[in-house]
Length: 516
Image (tube, rainbow, N blue to C red):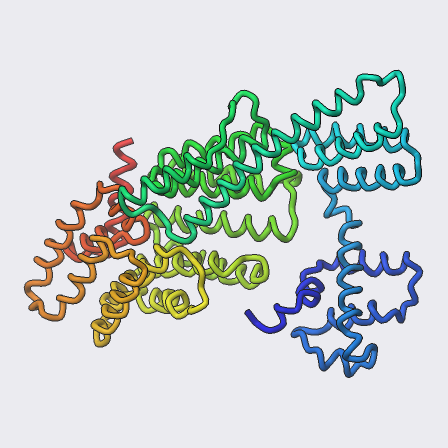
């Protein structure tokens, strides 16, 4: 990351829209602060800077160097307060929290009855919107107030609040256990990717079953079901059970479509659920369902009622465009997908502060794959190099592995075989270090290593032999995952039949469509 992005205040100022900047200046005006206030002057300086430079600020003379840190902290706080007051950032969660704050103030003033009235309304709102953590906080404050202000007309109030607190606590504990499990499985998936053998499958299954809490599906609310489906989804992805992944991703998405208010309240989870649904359909090669789901997903994000903010906009771009790539891959329309690359690269500049490096690298892998399918192998290598040369990168091991495998194949296709032996050796060392050397990778590397010793008239026979070997792995649940990242079988068929790989993949797609 560049230096200016490391300064939190500068990044925050640069993230503000025109309306948010106007709102901030109006907010400062309402405070009755002098227009020459130092923190407002600092805001105006930062707003005009294109790159964060502390020396420029000091030269303006508004503050001494040793006082700058405090001034920046004060400005940061004032911007956040202004953003909190901005209607565009208001949602049910913030409104409930605000009511809880008001009730707390009234309680400290001894106005118990008024405080309880606000808390009762806030609690109903929280429970109806599945905000059970805040609801539990509200009940706990109600218990404190009732212990000091109990009326005879509400003699059963203590029992009622005790039961309510217990129920909410149990629901929150269940949600916490399910969300912990979901997060742990997701972390495992990011680190290792799919399970590689029966032993790993047993380990992941035991890990999942040991941590899955007991539950009654009929008593679960929206929030508990959401985390339950997420947990099962990650377990299914890890164990390469894409049919099960589809089942739970569909359940995840459907509970949102059945509760439209929840889409507005939890847009991030709605976006993620749709992404995983599309990913499962892509792996299952369900083209029609994939296309319908992607169209429906994109239409919803464009609705006026759909919640929009910087974070949601960035994620919507990430998930929709990742799956637009996948649609072109499914159809074998690589050249038709090339204009998408420029659009994505341009948008990545806009969202550079909102999308993590891992997901940017995933885009680079898809871009490289698009160029490979379109026959532009040097451009493919260019984007793979961005992944391979990134020494600080933390991303899925399987993606790192197949970036290197595709790099080898692209070098061969581009005729850049003068350093192929060096590339093969470095890739081999890398895979051994990762302990991710599967039979498919072994066969590909062995084949590429031996290409230099094969006479031109023997190459086709070598391709046919490798094709036959790899086909035997197609139905293997652990080995077949290699073909999710790199359709090496279609590449071999393109070499055997002397046709572009796009034509081979397109032919398979059309044959599949005719069967349905």
